[in-house]
Figure 1 (cartoon, rainbow, N blue to C red):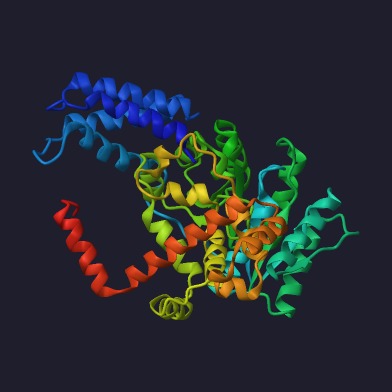
Figure 2: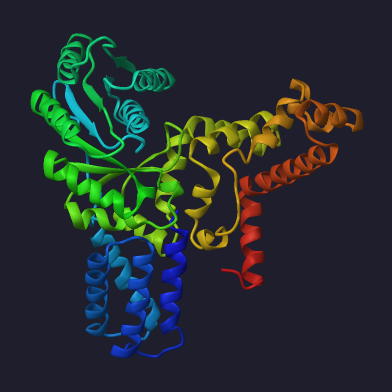
Length: 445
């Protein structure tokens, strides 16, 4: 995410490396590099120019403290301005009502139907709601089928009328159905088009007028860059939506839509989609996104994702097993499953400060754990609990069953043994203190 932009910003700040003070000349040079970085990220020229003007004015008027360098000062100012450019603070969605009604809008292919499912799942899991998905795309039968598949995958009911060609009527009937069946939030998935046309806009305007939603959201593919911003403006002029959803942000290395859209439509980005899985949905936090753009990682979001997936009681049980040296491959497999639920591996690793740059040219597949899981699944129940049973013939059998080699099996067994020993040491307070003392002696603080 935003790899190209990170690299260009890093290049811009290098202009000030080794310089003792901020001057109009070196700030102007850095600002020029920042503007180029934004333009390369597909940010509009006006937005990029206004942004760098504000950065330059703030930098020249700011005293540099002895504790920080000019480049650090520019990073701080740029961070502040990026955060402000993207909205300053996170924005909530309004799902209140009897029922609350959320209207989805956007072009075909933007990920609107998938996001509707993600939002329904988020409301169900995080907010304890009983949502109802409504299929109001009357032009594509496949869209109705897709929404039913999505709803079934997350255990959320879907309302559709396959023979009805009146989207407004379907939406109204769905709300009545929701009231009668205990659904407290209704998510209306409307039809998208390959391009904006008057017929499309009139239809969605009619739906909005009839159901009076508590929230109208515009879904846009982040990878379309400046085109996404222009489309958002057209939709907002007609619909006056409440917020923006950026999908496919995990595939966008530039970031132009995320940086520009707020300044153009004056509406907040509320959520971002970061993958295909139904859990791959994040509340948009401008400050955290600025951290990631500037290569600082996003530890807060990483911790939040971990807290959502790891059960406290299960963690206590696991700790007991570790201290008794009973941690086995079943536990190992369980930890892998929980990590996978947190999102794709490369995205998670990029949240660690400094890792984004290190992973720039590294390809990490979403199914990075596939081989490990295959090997564990090829073990017998006894072998998972007691890996010491796995001799040469068992290794050969496990390798055949998992479609791997004996070398792969040996590598996993060695890694597992090392992990178990490390976890045992980490669980022992005395060992932890010894480790910390050793680190201090080595000059590591």
